[in-house]
Length: 427
Image (cartoon, rainbow, N blue to C red; front, side, top):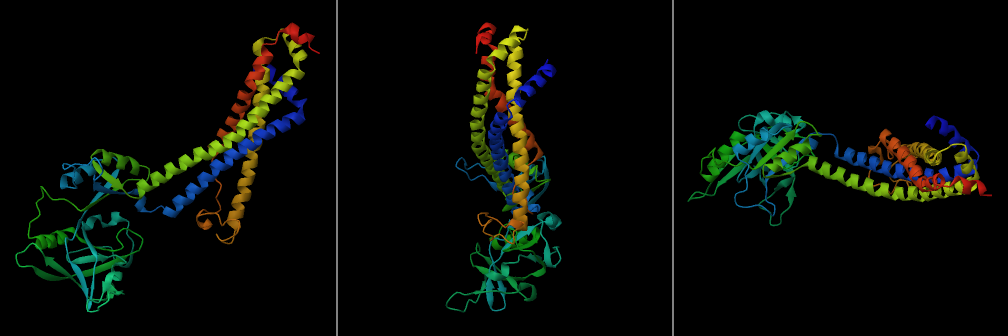
């Protein structure tokens, strides 16, 4: 039946080409608005993700005791047993427990400084995603890896006014001075530290010195005067690495279900994606208003078509057409108007995508007057400010067609219910 009615509907539309073009033009504007606004959010999202990068930090999850408003005195700590639990979570590649030095300062010649000394299992170093700029990524007894900003924290203690001094620790002999504060007679101890290398700036360890966890625990035992008890020992920091960026959110949720708090770049990325999803819905809604306006145009066009073709409808019914046949013809016409507008809108959107992206790509820099509104360096996105996925084009065409059918339903229903006798008497 559709095969017989479709040529009839196409013929009816062809008789009023001007009206078809104007009505489909309204759908074109609405479809283009929806596609371009949503495509803009895809481009901005990709740019934001590019600024974060594709490095190991995207799979890194920091685990903390849950100090939220619902925390109580029995909240779980980062114990040895907790680390074992984290290893059992699906999607976990590695668990990196760390211990911080309880107290001490750095001495380099006449200068005194501070560095966050942290102990780690040397076998887990490769999982931190660190890249050395000097030396090698390795730790042995009495050795340390230097954060790139530790040398900025030095000063001359003999000066009356504090002034920061920068020290090249890789080429300056230095010591770690430890203080034993739990002893009845406070004492201090100086320990030499051999640096095996320094790593690239831009990580959470920029102001830290990494050492073997056994060395740091041994120093902490001397500082506190107490032996570490494996049954009650608590790590100061635990980093969990997920197997991939896609599984990091599931790993975070599983760890939170165990009673711990989590953070890290993966959670930030998830929040960023949620933000852009919300923006996509809001901007898509703005574009949908234009489609709604176009729907009134389709409804008006179909209503006028019924008034002009009332006698024709009567003739169709007189020769045996059913109400369903008449309804189908007018719904096909309304759907074709929406489909034509949707296809044209998608075509226009793809054309504007190429124009805008080419303008962004060829712009000399982000200070160009046309691009000054963008909150990022345009070189990060490689000329892809507007990104139209294939599924977005298919969705837009389907939506435009549905808008046409929906807008034409009431006029088509009126046409279907016209009594043949009344329709034939209409002049």
